[in-house]
Image (tube, rainbow, N blue to C red; front, side):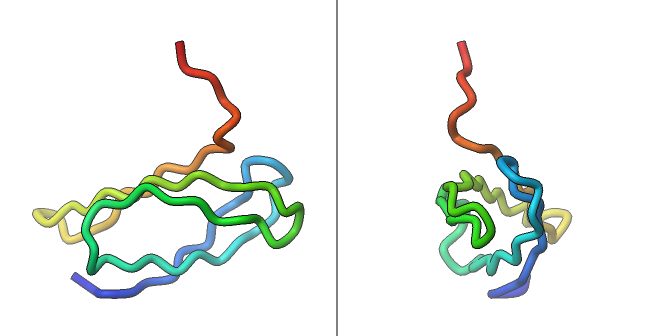
Length: 67
């Protein structure tokens, strides 16, 4: 699996395109990036799938409530 990769995502707040650098050397991660367009935080959850040799990336605005 690659150590670093860039993924382009859409901001859940404004819809702007954001380039995110993913570092796979630390395993599964849960982190935040600020949108360069609207400056709101974007919550990212990265899951490494070693069997399929790919990355599953979940994105949300972190202001969504789960009950």
